[in-house]
Amino acid sequence: MDIKNVPNHVAIILDGNGRWAKKRGQPRSYGHYMGGRNLFKVASYAKQLGISKLSVYAFSTENWKRPQEEVDYLMTKPIELYYKNIDKFNEIDYKIIFSGRKDRFSEALLKVMHEIENKTKAFKGFVLNVCVDYGSYDEIITAVNQLDKPITIEKLESKLFVKEPVDLLIRTSGEMRISNFLLWQIAYAEFYFTHVHWPSFDKKQLIKAIKSYQKRQRRFGGLK
Ligand code: IPE
Ligand code: IPE
Ligand code: MG
Image (cartoon, rainbow, N blue to C red; front, side, top):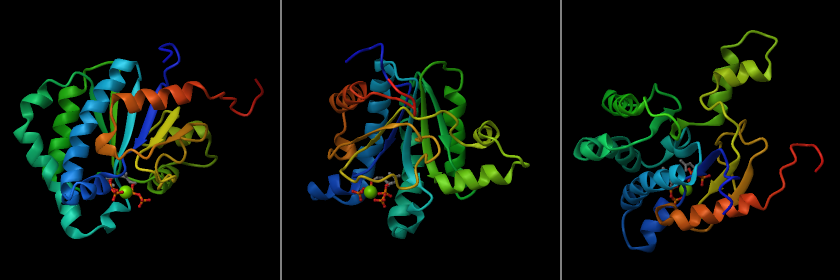
């Protein structure tokens, strides 16, 4: 891996928690639990490798359609895990932010998200951007509704939840679709799809994706 050509902004569609669990004869919730744990491991690797920002898709505006039991698990388990592991959260040495709608979460979950953002806000350098209740249609429409005409690229971007263009987009678990993630920001991103389910995606997999990125010739519409 060429350490001088690491993508600045990496986005990952964290897919395959359910299939990972099913393969192991476990409930889907166990896949979400292990997927959540994996997120902190992968964020540390990303930081070590010199990536500036890691945006991850953890819950989409469409994921509310899932069975109530699963939605309830995803909306309440993180609260319990946060308070249980508060010492570990206090040791996190990078900035964490949450992007997405904030009007459909419980007060308890909002409080946890706020605490995490607050206790990590002073860190410079690497940022872990967790996209929750995030959908690009919602993001773009919300942005447009805040603007007066004529709308420009710069004005629109200033109102988006995620402002930086994505350099490398990774989707785990084999699906080759975007599912309403960062539609604006991936205009010139390089795509990398892997069959590995999210809870099994490790440092080796991340390096593989970056190596693939480094073989691409990015032209941005010009000529090389
Ligand atoms: C990704 O894993 C996590 C969320 C969308 C919350 P999935 O839950 O989509 O897992 P699969 O795709 O059903 O295996
Ligand atoms: C995309 O995964 C959303 C997240 C990873 C949070 P989904 O599992 O919801 O996507 P589809 O339904 O397969 O497109
Ligand atoms: Mg899925």
